[in-house]
Image (cartoon, rainbow, N blue to C red; front, side, top):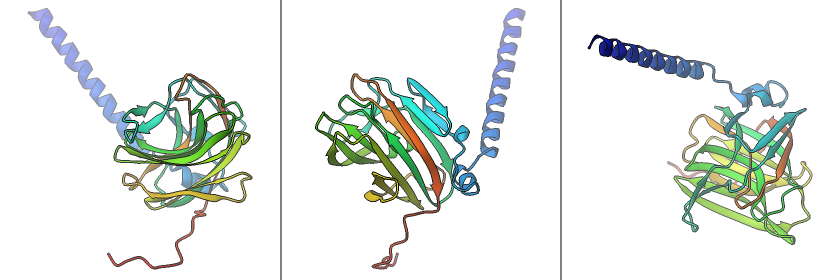
Length: 247
């Protein structure tokens, strides 16, 4: 009996220490919040790549001289329910975090190696499995690809696409936030951007996480390259036409 009591006391002590450790780590995490957008704007738009965090790590990656390479694993994807009735939530996502309500994020993507149907890479705002936004080019076949965006609110994905030539191997994106509304734009040269989507994200109330992703939904793997990442003042200006309705 004495041995049992000593054992139970030791377990209780370890459990208490573990719980305290978890509390300390949580408190440290809350206090050590780094706003990547504020930090970048104070540095002329330069993003501290060391501050980016993986939601899920890819099969392989390299970060060097401002360039990020992500190698995908087969059967990785992001999608929730709509039409296909499956829930895929295992794509590697590399993000930064912010409380800033007005800003733009620009990145260049190179997907020269994509070769299998649905191989894709682009920008993402991944809040949780049921709430996220992405823009990308998805390989289809040797003739064309899908340039598109997906807005997922409350567990249902909405996909909008247009066909582009399979000869296109690079694409720039600009992701802009105005409070809890968002705009995704694309560009072939990094200068002239065209709107892909504007949308409202219900879960994007305060802190958001956003960045880049790549995945291969089918039996495939490729390396996507991301470069020229920067933060700017919000390039998506306030609407100057019809005024808002009274609430």
